[in-house]
Length: 269
Figure 1: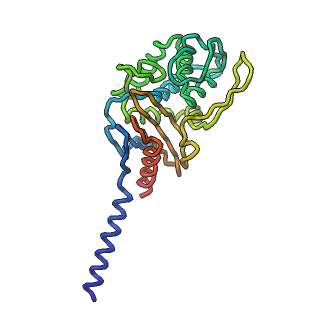
Figure 2: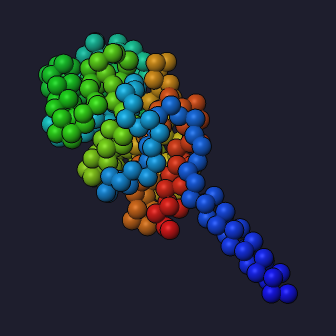
Figure 3: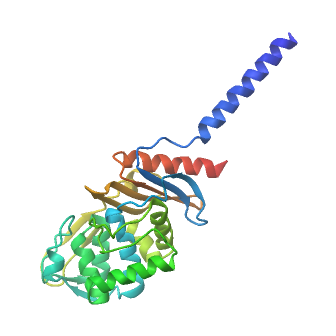
């Protein structure tokens, strides 16, 4: 009888240990590179090729937003140039001569990932795109991002435009400390009007997690043929804020939330 009880106790212990191990195991993800960090402390909770140099696509715009908020005037009136309006890739559908505030421009840039808005932002804040990109790189140096370099404000591929999953997570963590940054990247939908043409524009954030994941509060999507599908996702629950980054990931809408859920469970242990 005692032997049977002992065997049952051992089986129970092994079963509980197996359950604990399964609960603590990180999810399997498809991303070529990924990372999960505690936004407050910077602690890395999960990493997969997180130091690998990668194309960041439109997750670049996190640094564009940070730089514009630090150097620009949100209430300034921006007149869109023909160069900005003609920018390739994802677009806010701006026309040359359109006038709107920098705040409206930045919100449009982040929600629909407008490359035209990123170019117009750079021209407004710094006078030229190349000067603005210099400001972005100076910010990267200040943040001690040794594996990041920008050559444009929007993220279209260039061999001198690169980052890593870990650096992008750190950029997001830095940005989220700014209340205006945090408000913009957590906005699910937005309506605005131009100063000089009629009608109201209504746009929807490309970050679907804002409407589907509990606690989601940002941050940025990205996608190009060179970079693949990318996502920097943040969520906050019970004063714990986590940031997940997945790069070149066909399953980004599953992998990022799975990483965040894993992180919250781990932090609760």
